[in-house]
Image (tube, rainbow, N blue to C red; front, side, top):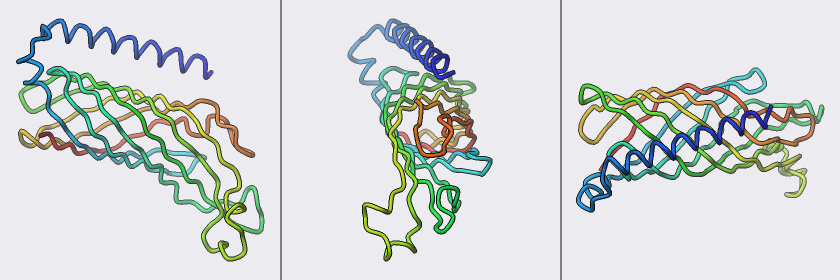
Length: 207
């Protein structure tokens, strides 16, 4: 299953490369055009999904640069918020999930009616996932005992967004993405634990 997922990821990345090449060709790689398109933006997204049949949220900060008129490249970091107390691994103490990942993004968008944009994106990142005892047990545990298990993983996250530009500099978006990870090997945990669809809203400021 994971081989198919990463094959799909490779095909999508290849498609982006072709699209990027076409965009450069259309732009003519002229210095004055590159300067015109080199606009920076910062964004914040909040997406919601489900892990282990319980709701979760993803909070992301990003910064990007327009390398052509319709292609953006940038950096992004995501914190996973899973506010549920668990006791599957320890009947006497509760613990929680901590996770996050960061990497690079590539986005291609099309503008409609001046104020509307539809975009497709790819987010490739590395991250971590750990089970950690709740803070109320800190007094009875050493710092080496606070974490039950920890694993690192890689992420490929294709996405689709619909953006309305409130002004020349500010845009609001509705977005959907699907997170696919490499195999996660944690105690008593499905190796596809993090794979899920997410839906949410975002805001972006361009300057």
